[in-house]
Image 1 (cartoon, rainbow, N blue to C red):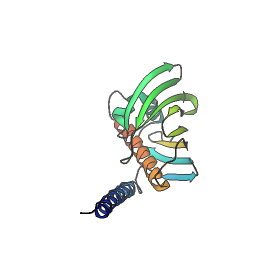
Image 2 (image 1 turned 135 degrees about the vertical axis):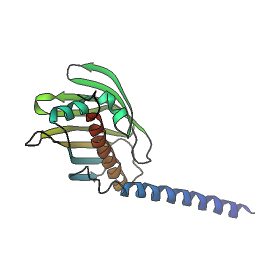
Image 3 (image 1 turned 60 degrees about the vertical axis):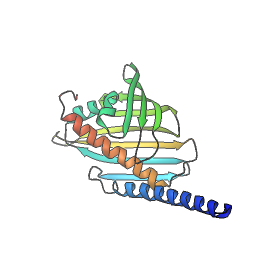
Image 4 (image 1 turned 90 degrees about the vertical axis):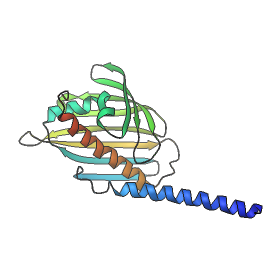
Length: 197
């Protein structure tokens, strides 16, 4: 074989591998498109800033749901996408955490984050203080159903890219959706265990 043939084969293999990776990301993204855990949603990406809002309903009273979310140091055992949730410091109503997230087949992202509980207003807010690819800031807001047996959980966040992200907005949106769905599932799982709340 001559050099042109070898280079052609290498380029073809790279293109096939890249095409397969994009196809696999889109295939994974599609499975989260109509998740039953989401009752309302919005996602907008303008340049490097994504504005995210997901709403779900959890079968459980507001105090238990809020406690499960506030126990963020347990989230790596509750939420499939959270690979690490290490408590660094806890002072009053604020926790500093080292968090590692992975959604779809995207690389694991590590954040140092502050979580703050505003218990009377049923809000857990969060903000990254150190991040690899994007800064993240937002909150979980909880509202009880009229009969008190269910809780409406609203996730609102803003993600600001720190580096150029090589993925289309639809993949980022699907990664966010997957993480929210798995958070709802993780909270539901926590409510079924004796240590929740």
